[in-house]
Length: 424
Image 1 (spheres, helix red, strand yellow):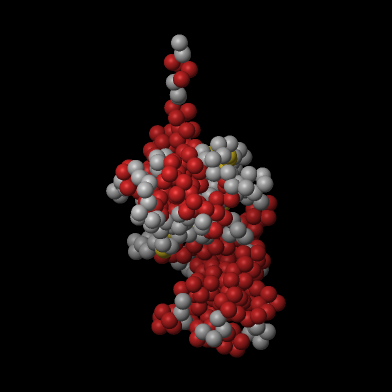
Image 2: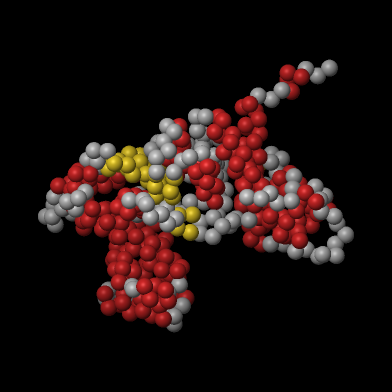
């Protein structure tokens, strides 16, 4: 007779199984439906405009390369900025952040051009530190300028840039001083009126804004630090780096086949759906990132598979707030719009009474997303179940849409449960 105690799972065991299900569904959802919602900026009128500007400016100037930075600003005797990164802090990060803190403190006391801590010096420091990210953004701008040179909005920018910068050449942007291009984009964007902006594609405006954002952020910080209204707050400013949670072990996940079959019970329908996915080169490319073996072959039925996970920058800040039960109104600036799963996690927090406002959302599902390990196991379980429900809907709706689009005369019978979509 089997000992029942040996088969009894502990709460920790059940949680681990639910976690495995969560990360498995993240991988599946990302492969078949990587973009869930449209990108948007959060518009909130009752957040202090100055706090929002400063937070966003700090998030911009601390995002050195491909990393993502989140910033929460609080006021005590001075500004306290809690800075989170989606990876480890490097020695050069620490040196740079300490320099910026010193610059801002000194500018609040003496912002004259003769001072070592002047706006030009701050801007130069920012552009040097963020040069890699600035370069990648300039490459995107160059593509805009060279691919559509006959568009009126492109002609307008080139005319402006050529008049301001003698060495400006759209085809040779790599040879132009990056700091000058950033200044140029900032100044051009600033002088555009509402009509011009409405006539210009948002994607191009976004590229201009991003290239110019480093100069814009440095100007905002310099202006506020030397402003009489904020001098005292800047004279005591503290830039606190939040210790990142580094995940060293990979996360085991279920196979793609196992997850899809939990939604499509009929084997024939599963094969039809799988074949439809494998006919889509974009889906196949995403599948290979997770489900291919050492030879590059897809193994959708592989049961021994793992994925790397990491904590997103904004979640590190939120985890601290949850552990402290801090439900005060909080604005979090992020150097990149937050992903679909962070958006849903914040939605769960709001249902628990947390007043969280984020700088923007892009509705994409990212591989490697990690659920914050807050102190309360009960809170973790409830948030995990909430996310499982959301992901289940994403997967189910995609299967629903794709299966219905197949030949209506097919003899296969799809389980009725496939079409039962839970209401929001």
